[in-house]
Length: 164
Image (tube, rainbow, N blue to C red):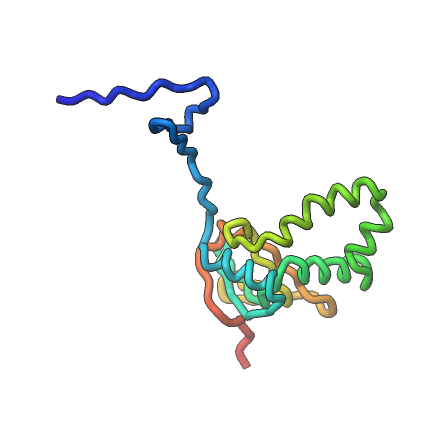
């Protein structure tokens, strides 16, 4: 029976790092959730398009138009501020130093189209179905929904509508 002898650990290596000769391999984080949904989230953000989609989350169905995060935030700002954009609200309520710090974090994310970094889907005009019943939605402002992709157990193209 042969015996495997582990390589000596170097002081700069963590327990999750494996040394092979002079090459160091570190674990690659794997994004959770459907990679196709991550791709669609990326495309919706980069190409600014809308697409009808229905997703299953925690035993409920959510149906609406897939939009990018920027569009979703714009709509959220209008809903929360009576038509005022989030950017305007941030300028009004945040001092310049904090606004610059937020911009330094958010701008690189907007310019990096790698789908594995998209963790959320954003829907507008969302409708909820619990069992066989559509949950009533308020009139007026679009119903916005944001859900973590890793929590979505299934999806299909198109939006659900009430019969008749």
